[in-house]
Length: 617
Image (cartoon, rainbow, N blue to C red):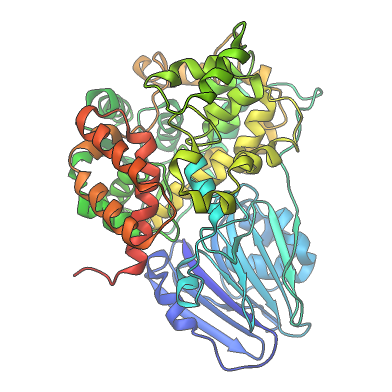
């Protein structure tokens, strides 16, 4: 992958700090760096060389010199597009997918993004018309951020450059979202005034305009009654084609192997197309209930892979502090920690790896989709009990186990989908967590609005079809793919996700949930393949996510960071109710089981503390 930046200016002013901005994203592209600028536009690029190692340098000009592009990603159908363009008279000087985007723009204009199959974020500058086009792939595999300054528009891969440009004020609603969802949904970022381009979107910008004109070019399709589920043979062929073309690389390639169905299927298919043993990598936890390394080893043995296992307990409080501080914005899925360590291990051997991200969202792999078939109903007199609990001046221990039985279906969805919210009498209550003076700006009563806004585009009832489609633009795009991108790119490792290849997405997404979940069987379409290709221990067991035992870690080896962040926050960041957090910390040290409520505030405090302090030697 790469790091890109574009300074698009209202007037021809002094050259902006392109070099300094690129330096802040060096980890995204350590192999080469390039700059170009004239008049209104200055483009920069850090390259992680994967395809066309010799002639793929950027910023890249079109053959006629009119267009200039900076691009982050991989286009998997670039050879087909190149053939189509060549047949129409286009000329190419390189064999890179980057030049295909340029020549595609010459031919199809902004419509080029709808022809691209891959993961991408790019900015193209038209030197004649003085107009910029920027775009991000359909599901947001690759990031793109923007902000308006006094000089014009700044567009970057990630947010590191914006700190140097003065964007340091925290957005209160973004803080609320981070506490609520573990991530900050687009278009917000943690920095006030900085925005994420939503997945499946493109923008056009001209000098003198107030901001980019953003439009969506793709949205997940609704369930289509005419679509029929693929046969086992058709699905295997689609998966095989997706894996095969995502293995195209001019550098060594490997695979993350968790021991789950998705990553194991990828390894099984990769073994068909690799002349050498596939290089696979997994992580092992000391805690038995969180460890899947034994299952991963069974898969590795069956397909004779070159397998490596990382021990997760090596992550110390200080290395955790450094990891959180290196993120472009705070992010609270604790699985980032072992995934980053796994990426560091993997990068010692290969530059590219495949991952099973997206399989659960595309094929219906989460238990919550089963629950959507029949949300719990409040028991009789629940309204009276609830009002009585909310009237109490204190919150009794253990009341949370009762509280879920008092909620309507809509409230139950909110409660189960969030880390914190507007939940009186419960430990997940934002009013307890946030300082009194901060609550109004955070608008805690609207805590679920970012998710509902997206979900309502697919239907008013929270059935399994709506949940799956909403997850594409929420949990998948903003959590899973962000986690994978940041963890891997901090190690200068490219991760590809074949389950999100358009070949599969276009075929599977239009299916009804009833085609993906059959008689209570999640991912019913994939299981015949899994049973035929994989060891029984992989598919005949309960789903086991990439869990991290943060309760034990926060009460043990990571407690020094908890104490340090709370001490710093009380002195410098008056957004939390620190007596409440101190109480959680004492409970955590005494009896554990408090990790989920304590973790998110500690992550934000640690990240903010790291941004404010000079780097440690």
